[in-house]
Length: 551
Image (tube, rainbow, N blue to C red; front, side):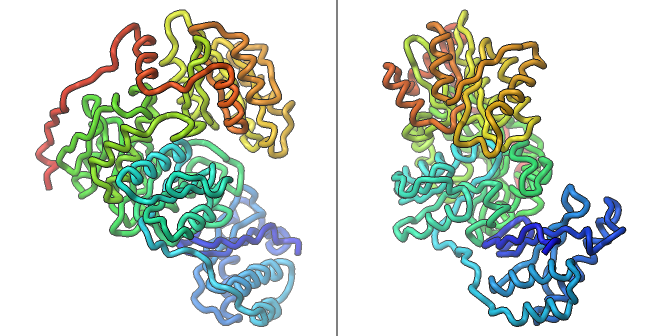
C-alpha cells in the first residue's frame, strides 16, 4: 500500500473518542489527484469520512462514528473510528487504504467481512478510586505527593509514573509507565485500594488511556514540549491531547484545573465533572466564577493554603510544606495546591492532607530527581529534570533564591534529542543569560537520533544570542557536574538538568561528602539568601467572603 502511513490501535480513551479507537494515517495524493491543496482539506475530510462509512456499511457495521483530522502536510489525514473487535477493525483501516490505492469499495469491504472479529478492547473498568494526573510540568511531583497523602490516611496505594509502578511505596516494576500500561499494572494488584496514575502525552496519542474513567483528574499546566511529534505541532493541539484526561472524569468526580493557565482553565468546557481550581492568586476571577457555579478552589491567602467551597478552610502555612522549599519554589507551591485539591476531591480527610503535605520531602526518597538540594563542601547543588523552558525557569528561580551575596550561579544544561531546535536553542539562551557559568552535560542514552554535535551547536546558538561565546560540553551529566564543582567555590550555587544519570549523580555527591538538605537546612539557606530575613509566618488568615459567593 502506498497511501497507508500508519495504522494504530488505541486501547482506551484517546484524542478522538472516549473509548478504544482505530487511528489510520493516510496519504491521499493518488486518490485525490489535483484536489490536494490546503484549501481543499474540508472537502477531502468529508469524502474520506464518507468512504469509511460506506466500507463499514457494506461490511455490516452501520452508523459508525468517524473523525477525520488534517495534519500539517496537506496530503496526509488522520481517520479515526471506535472499535469493539480488534482484527476486523484493523481490517477496516487497511480497507480504507486499499480504496485510496485504487481498489473498489466492494472488494475492500468483502475483505473486511472475511476477517474474523478478533478480541475486544482491554480497557480497564476501575474497581478503586483513580486519580489521573497530566500536564507538561509537575505531573510526577504532583502524583507522588497525592500518593503520599493517600498513604498517610492509611490507603494501600498503587501509582505509576515515568520511573515505574509503585505499590505501597515499593518500586515493583521499573520503567516509564506514564502510558496506559501503567494504569493497568497498578490496578492489576488486588491489594491496591487507591490508584494514582501519571498520564503523559505520548501514551494518550500512541495507545490511548488504559482506563475507561477516573474519579479525579488533575491538569497541572500546558506549555511547549514535545511539539512536532505524533502530529502535535502547536500548544493548542497539545492542550487538546491533555484534555482527554478530564474529559473522561466521572460526572460525580472532580476535575482539578490550573486557574492561571488559560488552556487548562478552558477544559471546564469538555469535562462532565465538577471543577476544582488551584491558583496562587486568591483574587483570581476564575475562582469567583467557579465558586458561584458550585465548584471549589484551593489557593494561598496570607501565606496559608486555604480551600474555598465557598466558605474558607485554612489548612497550613506554605512554610510548613517542605516541597515548596520554604515558599521559594512557585512551581512547587502550585504542585502542592494541585495535590491538596486532588486529595480532598478524592475524599481524603483534611487532617491527613495536612500531615501528608508536612511529611513529603524534596529528597531522593520522596521525590527523586525533582528539585533535590544538597550541600557539598560549602556549595549548594540542585538537581532537577528541568526538561523544557518552563522547567529550566523554575530551576533558575530556585538557584537564585538560594544564592547568598557574593555567590555565583553555575549551570549544567542538557536536553533529550527529540526536542525541537527552537526549544534547545532557547534552553541555551536561558542558561547562558541567567547563570555566571554554563556547561553542557549530554544524555547519551536519550539522543533519539541526534548527535551530540548537533545539540552542542543548538545550545551554543542560543547562548550566542545573549553574548556568551564559549559553552564547553561534556559527554555525561555527571562529568558536567564534576566540572562545575571544580570551577566553583564555597558560597556558589550549582544547578544540573539531570535525567539520564540521576542515581549516579546522587551517589557521587554523597561519596564526596555531600548531604541532602533537610527542610530546616533549606529554610536556613533561604533565610541567609534573603539577608537574614526569616521565612514569613502569619496568623490564621482572616478572609472576607464576598456576599455574591454565597449560593
